[in-house]
Image (cartoon, rainbow, N blue to C red; front, side, top):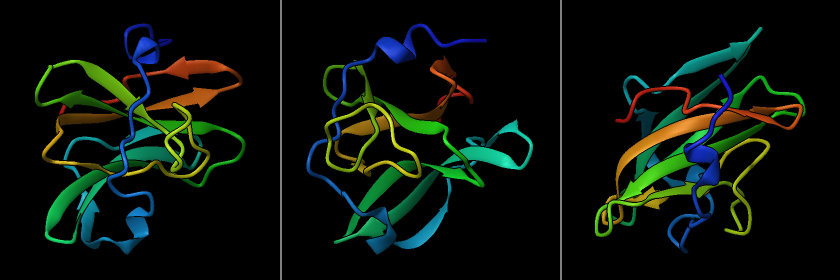
Length: 125
């Protein structure tokens, strides 16, 4: 089912963690993995960096498809999207920037194939 609400979310990645591979204790956020066709799947990963928790969306076994992190802000309860690690786009071809726990309190991933966005792919976590 194509996404409506989440794809309209404003882009906000902040300057939190542009390279999530620098995080330690990396694991999947339970309940966020979604198969999106063949061997391709998306999920939200979590880890710590500089003593803070971060979450980011990642796509595995991908081709030309895109992934985005959808998150709910702690302070204004608004939904935001984070894609490219430079914070300029809603989408990334591999993994997104990380959003910290001081800002995000709910996270999920979404997926884009042939210019059609699907998602939210999983329930809020």
